[in-house]
Length: 566
Image (cartoon, rainbow, N blue to C red):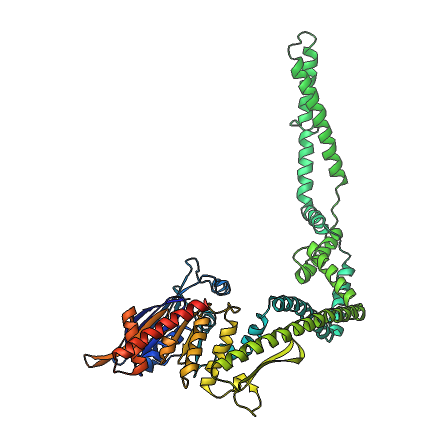
């Protein structure tokens, strides 16, 4: 809901701030006072284009700011959050500034957005109905939405259809992609087979590279290893030629302790430790000796291992970082080859799946179409009755449901509203109806019927919807606007006292000269001021006691009718 609108330097509006309420907000004033300029300013907030010519004479920029309530606006909240716009305060502040020179600016809750994003937000905030605007209701999507909200069963059938449509579409797209891929299969198969054979020929084994690296490292340093082994064994061996031999020294210590034990057993524990150490070191010496004797340096073996590692490295560069990755890639290649070789069987299974999905989709579409035809009949009758009450006794209105050539996101129907105002004229698509006045009343009739069903846009604007009507028709138009205002916030510019008297909030727009400039001001009328304004609208500038009494009577009648509507 629109809570306030503030305008700076927009045409005649130097600085105007207007507070709006729920229900029916009526804007009245003399012709040329600037009522439509306010609607243009609101249009700027909704994403309509503004020329720099709209900037007030003598100013360098114009700015419009609107504050909206986000209460019960879940769809809008989701969209704002998708644009990273904060919605935690339940308030939406939209600011737009246009400069003669330099950068223009659009802010939504402090975030810069593009004009395209602002338009999308505007479609979820306000529906402007005017003779020069394209009514959102006349758009194809809106006509579908009107019909699909007529009955909850239609909405449920539409949800089931969309689910079936998504499945059918997904399967068709997957089939088409697979079919397109098949054109490259001949070349692809050759490449896959070559890759598989290359990996197969290598006869790779998991973990093989670690064992190869270890053996290569050993053979590459065989001379150093042999030296380490010989020196270590010489130091351990009890060969008398080596005075540093550990085992020889331990053997002497061992014998000394054994001889000593004949006379003193105090070192029996030390003797035991020496005995154990001698045995352990002797075993180590034998192991080192055997290793040295078995060690053999074979250059041809090293060459063989290095060639094997080169083969593995080349495969890793092509197919994976490690040997494990290469083998995993080979598995994928084999699976793809198997899939390609079973292409015909696979495609037949896909075709069967598409046929099954289409059967389900067709059943959902037929149920949706049947419910839509029922809903169309109900809406046609109700809207036609409203049109006759709005001074169009010969109006012929219908919602036609025709079969579409193919399934679409909204079903297998073509929904079209048709209208004829005069006897003998064939009904035409609603979007092609020429008269702006007729369009306004048709929209009002539709809104009077659908307002309680339509929760998409919380605010509506009727810009001079009363053009070309009067008398009883004006009264019926007023009552239907009040009826819409039960469910929506309505802003209505009018010249008819019958409509103005239905106001929940009455705003008067006036202009006057100030310091050589024309200035427009907006005032919220008190009860007494409202009586004077209704009298002026009904009788002109000469307000008499009789016209004031008539205005009070009109307001009393309006209040009574609003109570009945509620």
